[in-house]
Image (cartoon, rainbow, N blue to C red; front, side):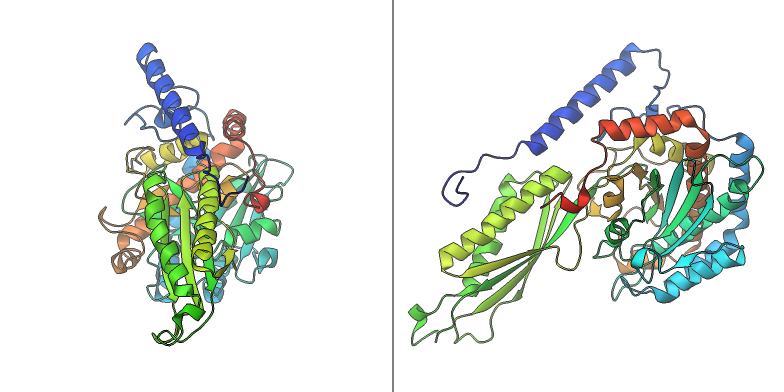
Length: 471
């Protein structure tokens, strides 16, 4: 089909997701009203599947790790508070941006070394990544991710210093249990994952083999509320470079072909496209280059864009629509266009949240006095992006949120950066340390939970070939 000359049938991807999610909610509500009120095997907290609102205060599945082992890691989290506070403070005071986190990574490796844990710095071909592990690789393996990059000019306004403290703390809290005589079969891997902000460091690590032999991955992110499951959009980077022909704008304008006209038409077309985009999709753009002098017909114009969508397949469809816009604008203006997707980075897929693992996180957080909001409580319009989505489409994973600020404080602001260095941030790191550690223990000890985790992952589509998904 000539995409330039025929009406293109709309993609049904978003509609298909709506139909499936509506059916899931209807089934869950019908089952809840007809049943005895007991929690389902998949966990009443996550009733209804993606987008559903869980039952506040509902019971959670039994099982998991032995109480003594859970108590041990929670006690260890409390004992680690001074060192977690040190990590929160040191990283906050010395923020480093993507792929430049040399001092931050060294700080975290140093903390591990104090506890007799040897970590590999420069893991998987990335100088600022690190890896440590404990246990038997012959058994099930769960990874805990630690981020530590900051934002340019505004520091830890996404709170990755808290993520780092929580990940390192959880691994240390687990270390004694995993080396004891009655340790569970299996292994815990700590992955230091740089370059989440504006990049996709986790995709680089995954392509370099970081997830080989790992069965599931967990991490936590600071926020203005405790949230078990919130929408994280897939994201792609895009550059349009329009090339025309220069000419004197007064004497011979008819001899030129205006690249700025093409960029302007394309920018306006994005606004028109929004009328037909799924409601949670996002496209943001800036015209980075638009000419040198008003008296010269612009020869070169450059537009930088972010494209975001709730699902992997709708992100792929949005990508096609943006390609069509660029080609159409070039054709209308007699210019040429070069389209560059994800230059210097990789796409970020949406987070595919595993509800069975989420239930265990919620149970652990309730023991800490927190009550994370279920999926569907917060508006899905409050959505950002993360490269953890690329892990979650390869193996089961969770990416819950922990409160460090007032609810009205937004990520990527100076106010949130300040909140990431408060006593509330340290408290969140302690609670997250306990939560991640006990969730990992539940996964390793409980074969039934592991089966539920991987059955759910398979039902959601199983592993995806992330590297070629947008080819």
